[in-house]
Length: 572
Ligand code: DGT
Ligand code: CA
Ligand code: CA
Figure 1 (spheres, rainbow, N blue to C red):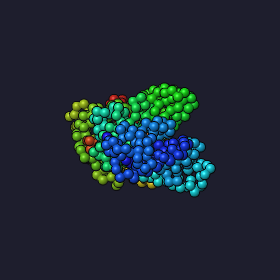
Figure 2: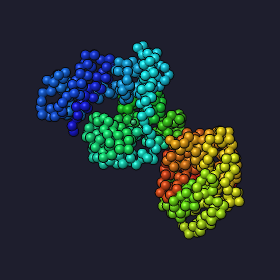
Figure 3: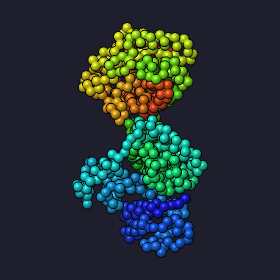
């Protein structure tokens, strides 16, 4: 392992920053800063000089004590003094030094007076005008800080979960293949299965962190190494995804996993709860009277503060802490509880496979049933089915149901809700189907009143049982249409209907928040893929993840039912 001059310089800068924030002797911090500058400007490789036994203490601004530290860094890849020091500070505190106008002195005041320990906290404080009230901080500076933190946020592009998933799994696989790696988990929003992911936060344990980090930065998909420390590193992959990797001690793994899984607001609530019980929590563990009482596993972290283990998908500060304390957390739905898929397309409309191919692919997934829901004919849909095509399709389904064993094909349609809430096919056709899935595909900009009325009217049709992608949003592309959700939930209940969680990675509609509220209103759901080819039946897991984030259990989702039970709930 070779430590670069830049890395050594950065260690001394961090040391100086932290010591200064702590209010240490300015002579010492200045000495470290001078050394960092010397090292940064040095023409020769310090690692090499140490290896070759050169006397580096003779370098300007270095001296015996700093030379000894450099030797330690070159030999061990880290500076113990800095690692110890970091334990006393929040992990993101130094980030605020990246903002122009904030040096260690100001950081110290912000941290001590306002408990600002991250860029986010800094932004919030600037937004609520708490910074300009501090001595030595003007309103102009507050504005500048706000501007800088807003810019820092904007840089971040978010990726669809499904786009990130293969990259995350490949990286995890790569890291696990390394003999020196023990635990490897992709934490952060990815572990919470959030519909979009900003960056990956990978947590590892190893007996030799520096070596593992070297292995990490050598990952073939790395485009750029942003930082390369001894226990942490940040890289950018070729697809522009940032990956933060940290290597922690086994005994702190649970605490670090909890910390870096987030969400931030979930963590803050845990920290407050710990404090109320006279404990302290950070990414190294849970402490009572300076004694570590938990840290190796997440479960012991939660139990340490009097809570049941909380699944990552629930960690969004939406009531999970109280539910965990009262032992009424949901038993979240699992993908293998899904027994069929109730929304998919074939070449009868815009799908790429025929009915039989879809049915066989579903059977391979061990489903007991599927519903074929090709589009109805309507101006906004190309190749939609008219009455005649719909009748032909139903005849084909009858034939296939006789032919195929082990899977039942249900007759359905993704039926357009017209502008006034009437439907694109007449009841005479709908009554031949097992049930109808209704959907909005146009007139997205109606007023909330009109849109709500339109959809409620469609739900009143006795054949309509499911509302597909209920808010119409496309992540990053199209906002949801305006609809009164409370009235929607009521309409769904009053008419014996169900709301779909559409598993298309761009839709994931209903989203987590609405799913939870709808459930609280008594609504039950379907989770379906809206597959347009056989391979896309695999999208089911994304729908399940969204459902889990919405606190849904097996009993909340009707396509976990047996075929006969399902037919009962779908009966008009
Ligand atoms: P993302 O990457 O935007 O999709 O969302 P996350 O949740 O992965 O956020 P990220 O990558 O900024 O940080 C990963 C986790 O680290 C986050 O979920 C919680 C923790 N964390 C980050 N910053 C802070 C902080 O300032 N305070 C606390 N308590 N935790 C933080
Ligand atoms: Ca992240
Ligand atoms: Ca991150």
